[in-house]
Image (tube, rainbow, N blue to C red; front, side):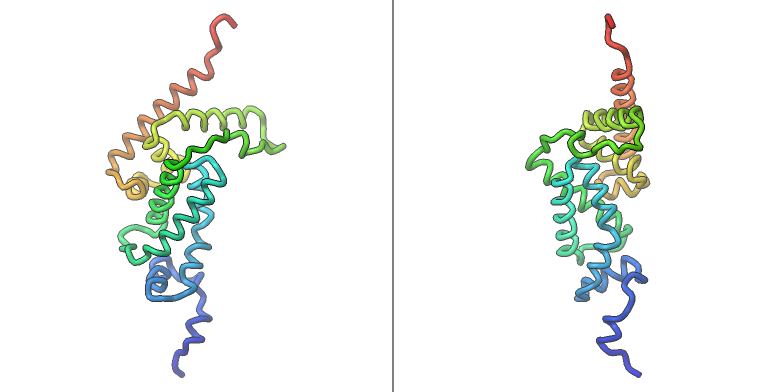
Length: 192
């Protein structure tokens, strides 16, 4: 029995690895990139939201990122994991959006406190985010990728298109600066 076009349509895309899906997409498969999107959209959304700190900007950046990935799929060489390539495209889309217009909204407007949260835990989280926002962009991105998203230094370096030593340095300097900022925030004001 020969394989027909109908057999190709019925195959289980979810069982295929990312590299195979990309190859199928580049070769003209109309469904392969949809599976890539389903697989990676939540992680790219989380990355975009942490990078931009604004849901609308993050949504636009994720849309831009996946459109760019769709169009530039042939440029994916497969040297790194697809997630690393998508991270780089998403971070670049976020930076492009942020360069156009910095979000004016405060973080409090976007993350309502859930009733089960403890007041102190919420304060700490907001303090950490406020401290992160005071860091230079390179340190923010390195810390977000390594400490918040769990990427290895090598993966973060590939996403940011910098040397691994640069990521290590940015993370180290960023952590030191955040510690100083957070310690200063804990110190009581003079005369109180």
